[in-house]
Length: 261
Image 1 (tube, helix red, strand yellow):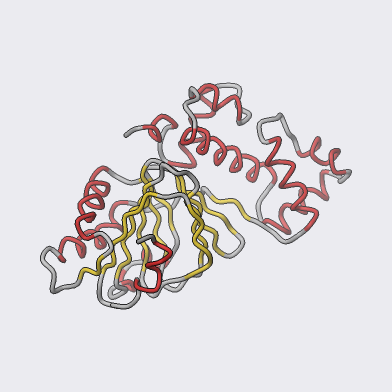
Image 2 (tube, one colour; image 1 turned 135 degrees about the horizontal axis):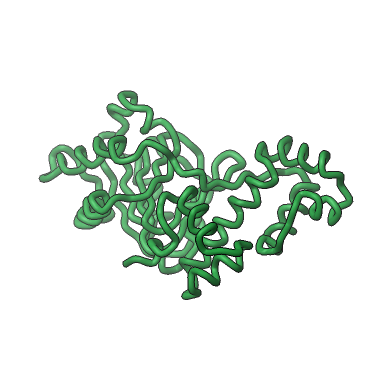
């Protein structure tokens, strides 16, 4: 069965861990769980939309969604394997990690532990099951593995003027765009355009463009066999060094690591 079909079953046993491993490309519409969700993205890319923000989760990264948060999940590439564990919420108040959305690079230890859970695929695992303590230990380990969530997020808006600008940037993200040239394109002064970004997206123009370029770079790395130098050029960078350093700031890893098996 697929994840969409199993959504009603996830919360049926509050004290369990529900395990789901699935290879797919799909859109899972707005929903929420009474459990916390840990998902590891293997070999692809996923997108989470929450409250006018879209978060990007590249391969070899995991995300945590706290209980009760409505979200849309899109698996954006058919080679993506999404390995998910839906955890009981007992003890979530003991560490702030469990109460905030976060995207993190996955350590080899965590990857191996999550892969081990495939033996319980599409099952509720409870304290009555053998090796339940393994899942308890996995959950308790999460706050110790990572401290800083990655800033791979693009805000979205209902503002029609900004939507037109966003569509333009989606098409021309690799061009040498400046606030001045973008203002000329839409007949808006630099000052007014800067204010528009802050008032509708709560982010600066430069930060939006940099984030958009990193997301496009992740998609190109995951979905194509282009050399990293070509990816850097396509998303507007003149040197591999500058691109690689910016990429590392956003993802905590180098571009080549997304293509590791």
